[in-house]
Image 1 (tube, rainbow, N blue to C red):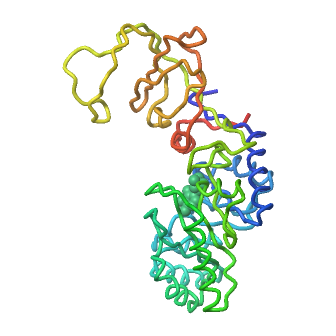
Image 2 (cartoon, protein in one colour; image 1 turned 30 degrees about the horizontal axis):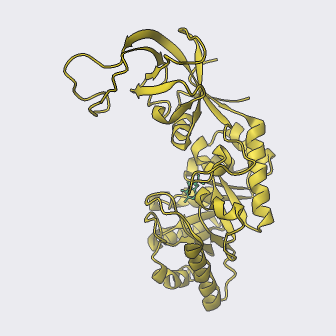
Image 3 (cartoon, protein in one colour; image 1 turned 90 degrees about the vertical axis):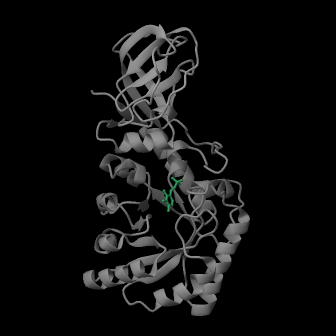
Amino acid sequence: MSYPELLIDREKLSHNIRTIMKMGQDADVKIHFVTKCMAGWRPFLEVLHEAGVEYFADSRVENLREISDLALSRMMLRVPMISNAIDVVRYADLSLNSDMAVIEALSDAARTLDREHGVILMVEMGDLREGFMPKEILDVASRVLNLRGVWLAGIGANFNCYGGVIPEERQLVELSELAAAIRRRFNVPLPIVSGGNTGSLYLLSENRLPLGITHLRIGEGYLLGIETSYRKRIPDLFTDVFAVKAEVIELRRKPSVPTGLIGPNSFNEIPVFKDRGQIWRAILAIGEQDARCETLQPRDSNIEFLGASSDHMILDVTHAVRDLKVGDVLEFTPDYAALLRAATSPYVQKRFV
Ligand SMILES: *Cc1c(COP(=O)(O)O)cnc(C)c1O
């Protein structure tokens, strides 16, 4: 065994997946399960497969390649790079798109490889990440329908990312009206109307997802058991599927404020300190290369985060529930940012329990 470790509770993970699949089925909404924070790690993908997931989505073709034999449908989430069009077509059945030149490259690649590839047109609805402007969409749809290598699978929108914009019924109604307009104008089925990510899950769970939204892309929701618009728990989901473990390498009583002239720390920030007098401090063998330390929530809520550098995390353990010593291992619950880094760090051992 080697630390740091990322532990994954297989039963809780499967429960979360099955619960979200059921939510989708009950509302007739298809869900692609997003795996991008697990770096294409096969044992994880296999657990999803065993829990019944057939639709997988990821932001990297390297990860989609690992899913090839497990998925009925693979969706590329990040707008493809033109330079990568061949691999996107090779490893994804669908991709989200916001640029006509990219879509043309995908079409050429699909014809070269003699494969089917479905295009989903992203529409900008306020969050200001990827997407065509709504008024362009009929024109773009017409151009995509004229390409011979790809088919027009749907339209979609993204929220809660760059601008932190919360998806509300208003924007999703607009999205489904755009879809209806495309269907009317061109007489195509346009099966996918993708209404966002985990930020839209609150609408699904409150039965408020507008009719006409047929699809969601869900990652954080099944991983961490929360929706991301209001950061509320989703009823009946586990919020502790993941745990990060790290080992204490120094434990000593020291002052809480450094002595000397204060300049930038290891990340070129000028640190500020609260004077709490002498405290018991633990140094753990985990750092910013392993996780986002500040958002690792200690399972013992009496333990407080003080700081971290590349390879060290420093905690105030003065009021820790258990008496600690060097060599002890502490447990943390990661948020999404900490999980993303831990699960993609080559230094962190992933293990199912
Ligand atoms: C990451 C991503 C998702 C999944 O987001 P979650 O908040 O984890 O559900 C969905 N769509 C796109 C385009 C993404 O990049």
